[in-house]
Length: 501
Image 1 (cartoon, rainbow, N blue to C red):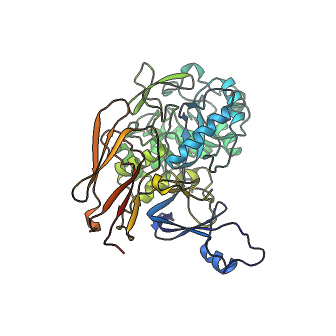
Image 2: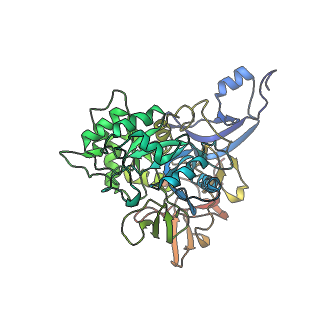
Image 3: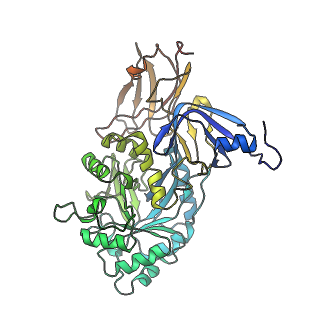
């Protein structure tokens, strides 16, 4: 039943035995992909008379849209706010590395810098489609320099600016051409800010409110002028007060334009925002929450001294500070860690956590018809490709196969894969030991000589599984999440259940 004349012969890939995130629910359906697009299987079958050219069994895993990170300052030694001979190669390196954390699109973020930095760097970061080479670039996020001195955080005071003299012309003089810009963070209390907001939004640029001492009225007026986003809620803004909640009050304001949804970024790394604050924001306005990493160039590098734009940064454990201070300076948590922490801290559904990192940022940028969902016709990028099974990981451009055992039901086949993506360099001396009963224990020696540590995992008792025969195929990685959180194991193993057929 292959296609007739005129039908494209591009291969069709069918993912089976999976749960797909669609319409806010995890549906046990197959997913069909061709040439980077998600297909309607009924149209494929009845209109084209086609079936899949290849099927891939996902082993009961979740297939979710690729994550979109709209605030990431760099990573893996690359600083987007630094001029180099080849800025593009640094962006490409980060784009390639963040794929393994589920991020398939991102907005490279520049912190407050001198005008010459913007003039040199911005033309070298064009919008770019993603693929097997790396995540797509959606446009640059300019965080500063038009921000509050009092709430500048890690931004260098010497380079802060205002636009009181010539309004939007001051913006152009500072940044240069805005062709590659997608988001601008500014403080709405600055003089003539409403003129600037209107001019930016007229060019299709998203305006975000942040690093600000604005009261609620000023924030509402900014939204009425066109602002749609809040940069890292709770951080670098006035704290919530019951008489004037400041920018935070936008989450429940009744003075927003009809039909306008205000989105807000949250750094759910276990450091920047207390779990109680995460819960308050999520329960007040769940549909506007956008998970961001605010990752700095030290992401993936470990302890030591690094940079962020014009500042030196010191990383100590899971925290990055402006060197010589206790001022937080971005995050070193990748997006998948933020999603897991947000899920645990808020008690939200898996669907909500995934959409906070995919659908919501796509809606913020007006891209929800092509990104952030698995709807028919949406981007699928290059179809996910399973590597050598012994390596136990799946890589994709837009789809992200979580490769974790189903939480809703036990495995339905005699052999079930469980594992995570390969992440070299995060651990040493890993060893898996089969224990009596259903448990198995992972022992490792952490990088930096932290000594031997152990963790164990048991299949949910509700599964009522027969005794599994667990064999180690390859150890990939572990991820020690922020203090107080559950350790996320990252071994690739094959669990055989002889009693299942």
